Image (cartoon, rainbow, N blue to C red):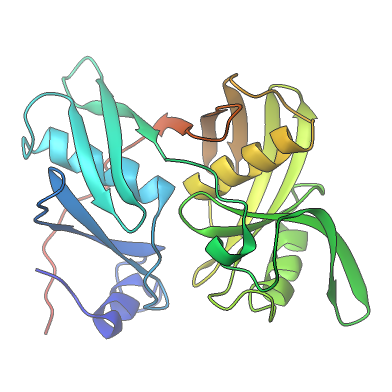
Length: 257
């Protein structure tokens, strides 16, 4: 069953619905094992969700919808290979996802203008920020600032709808703690501040590596308000691997009436 945008907004409303950052739907796929459809909390449809795909694959493996402990998931950015690791009870505890390549060209992010936008100035009214724009499935604007939730909320509310980004943009405040660790808060388009963001962790790690702040081809720990993810960016930007936990919270039945 595929809910529509209005139903997704109702389900995601934390005051009158279940409460969520988004709705994932398991659909048939000719390219992979299954296709993942996503609605954000505001009813918009992103190409990809890094946290969502880990939950999606946990469901597939735990419910025996696929054979074994791996799955190939069709997404808005192509077919992604996922490997799971089980706990003592035989249920998925951790998922490692090949998130694909890092996109830097503005036209593909998408972002107005030509070329790349790395550690350049972006203006909003009288304010000016140094930032990098890239995509690892969804567009991200990475600012190297203290990973403060209140500041991320302010920056995100300003920059999410910046006219340079025709499809809006996720805004990441990345605080590099060491060459192997980043603290991160993400303001997600269509959601606002979230406890974690898989594509944001990947984009911020890639931007940090491109800026020479962390190392390529090394697993980087990314600390988000809801926990940590572990990201490895290939030096040639052809692959980004994201490893993180997936936990079942509750189960129930939805009514679309």
